[in-house]
Image (cartoon, rainbow, N blue to C red; front, side):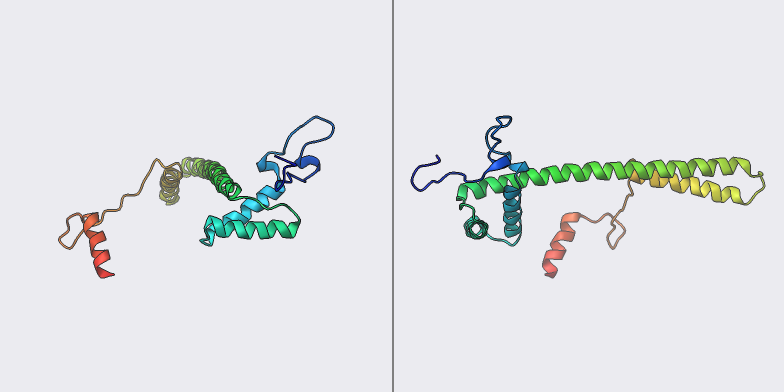
Length: 179
């Protein structure tokens, strides 16, 4: 609680603590607070370097002291780690949506190439040598479309010395024995 000995409370003013007009009271949500996002980025970097929470706490409190802010507790570091997980999930979802949009754009472009190849195929004479090239382009577009929309998967079969299928566990055992 603010005002108790040893707990001075949050000294931050302005939009972070709420507005005097009363339109928005309380504290700014963590995902909108630039200081918290900077602190989370510092925690993320320190975790990537292999530091534990206590080491991260010292690093973050030193950083906050240089900025003139109050130190945080180990509980705050735990909360930041949980917030990192939330941010990572949001990043994964945004990346997946972006990849899907790019995939759809590629499929649309390939379908347009395929339509143009069909038009050209039907416009040339039956004895033209270009007809096979147009058919090859159409086939290649179909294969690429299948790869982009994941309806076509390439199959790779691994065989052993005698031509039979190789057991994956056996391969892993061989790899471990070689080390």
